[in-house]
Length: 121
Image (cartoon, rainbow, N blue to C red; front, side):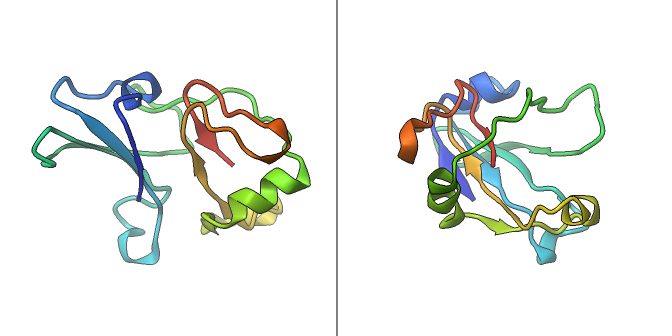
């Protein structure tokens, strides 16, 4: 999982008790529970207070992302260090091989600055 700070409230409707959030990568062991990964929220005692699944289908309680941004090769190379393999057949057929979560406001090589709510690359 990739940890994040209190900025998670800007990414999703985090529970009031949440002090930190983290991205949960999809993995073979949890494929039936979180096939696309999700977001977890913990309180000040590091106790999980909620988990939100990521889904490709629009839903009432889901994280929504804006338009994609094309990345320069040097940015893709930097992100590849933390990337995990794509498991979704549709994305594989479209040419995606790996993905990574980019926290809000992260500065990467080539001057790329992630958006105020973060995103997937």
